[in-house]
Image (tube, rainbow over all chains, first blue to last red; front, side, top):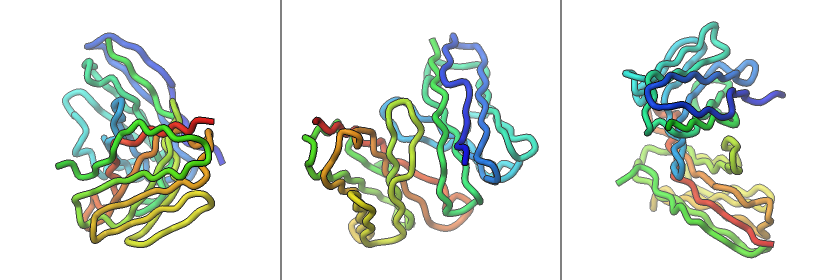
Length: 114
Length: 114
């Protein structure tokens, strides 16, 4: 079974630029999560999708972050414009269903904002 | 007070030692307790999953949950250099739409020296 795929693995941009990350969850997984992991911290949930609908985006900085999951499979997370404090690893995870299900994480995209 | 507290270490032990990793939490609604292992530049992977109080053993790993003290532990017996990683505790529970969302600790960085 293929795991969660993410790209790119690394990205360096200057502040005020825009950037997008892509995630392909495990086949058949209805729930998809985007987390932000700042160096030395645990992952923090940004947004959760159930199929192609948003379940929770309460911690997503909506003035600069956006995410979509068209067709209920792949997802993209965008930052526009980026700030220095957005430097972090962006992790995508998926689970079979909503609820107390095991979440499987991708390798993450490491973002550095200069 | 943060919801989940975890000593970030770093923790360095000789090969073969018993390792004890701990987290405390404040939200009494948490019922599901997990330990994730995260190797450098990789996504977290689920190591242990426990529901409510009690112990769970899997090979060299033992997870303990004491809900009365709001304290969880992970023990690693006969530690190996391959156990060198960051260990993240995570928990979820309660009622409502956000009950299944994971709240992570900061992670403890463990190094097992040959």
